[in-house]
Length: 322
Ligand SMILES: [Zn+2]
Image 1: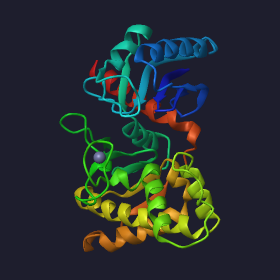
Image 2: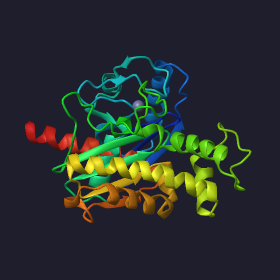
Image 3: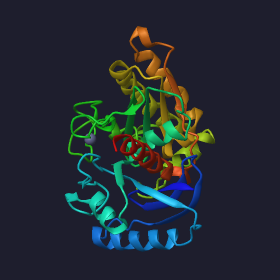
């Protein structure tokens, strides 16, 4: 059976697994990324975990290549460059390190780009040719598929929708710019909105008394789903800004759909309804009523399907070239 090894490196957890071309996860494992440690210690653990995992595979399983999704991973250079949530330094030769250890073809991509490929091959975007994935997690990641292929751009840095400007005098973003979309439409962003609203609104809310560090996207989502007025308002504010910027994205790309994923997407209709309303309000007339906004059906555990899709796609291209 032909398979690939998929590695999804996140700020908190790293997931590894062996995946078939049909998207079946044969075997998988999650371990702590320990973001404060050096790359070398992370990499040693990765090698150990991969060897342990693959030793359990059936004899007839053949691993053809390795797909890796990581924050700030560059598909052209194979490096991870300045990952904001990992203390790894400026430029880590991730693809080369993995290739040297496992002697298999290695393909890496920014995590949100890999997620877009995962939706295309295994998820709800099967058959679509133009769509945008927005991952609403700690930050706001994005992956763009144009004419059936991943949009990489000149430097493999395309699709940084999280850093388009919402307000030049707005919130400070982690990237150093002011007023980025990510500072509003992400888990971190909605937390800031909740605290802003708390200072202004006089309502009873289950979120009152929770410290900023203890407040999570899940807490806000659950409160909103229970009808908490403050949490619902926070979602409305977030969705209004996100929808407006999605309308801008439509003007650039004319996509069939947006697929929302990540922590905030778990709010479902609470997020979707005001996002669609805001996007429609701000859309150029030619696009009105034509753009779908969907919530990803991929469960959290399946994030390795993105890197797996990346590996299968590139292996196919390699096979055609040789
Ligand atoms: Zn930014």
